[in-house]
Amino acid sequence: MEHGHTILRCSNCGTKNRIPVKKLHDGPICGKCRTPLVIEDFDSPVTVTDGTFQREVLFSPIPVLVDCWAPWCGPCQMVAPIIEQLASDYGGRIKIAKLNVDDNPLTASQFNTRSIPTLLVFKNGKLVNRLVGALPKAAIEQHLMSILDKS
Image (cartoon, rainbow, N blue to C red; front, top):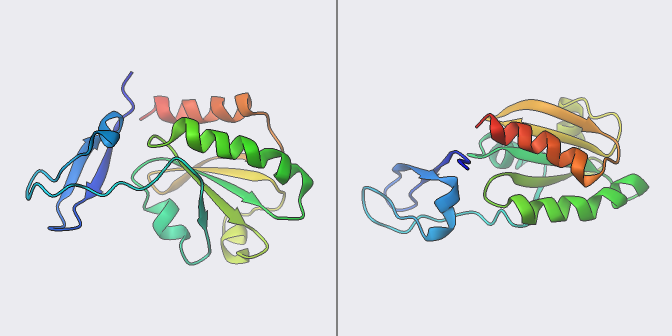
């Protein structure tokens, strides 16, 4: 099954390299200077803030699921283990990010996050789906698969 490609910029020469996602863990090297390409760790959720949201989410080479949550939110705590599992299950194909809405009100309001938990799905820097409420893993996966199938 084809999962698409991602673009990795070489930290040595700056060349953009198109790498099949399924080969990310094979130790890809730059096609120009042969330097090993640095791959982000996608196997666990990354914490995003108002200051890092654009870089981590909007400029991500792969789709991103953003979990908008707060520490006091009971349903958010119920969804947290599912989010961790999805990061492990889909590492390298989908980046999983967590945004604490209390600490990052600018991003939360920019994407009209009024209820939590809210899951925002981004692809190519654009919001393509919004899931509100404590959904079961299967329901979230169904939405993620629809994004991957369009890659």
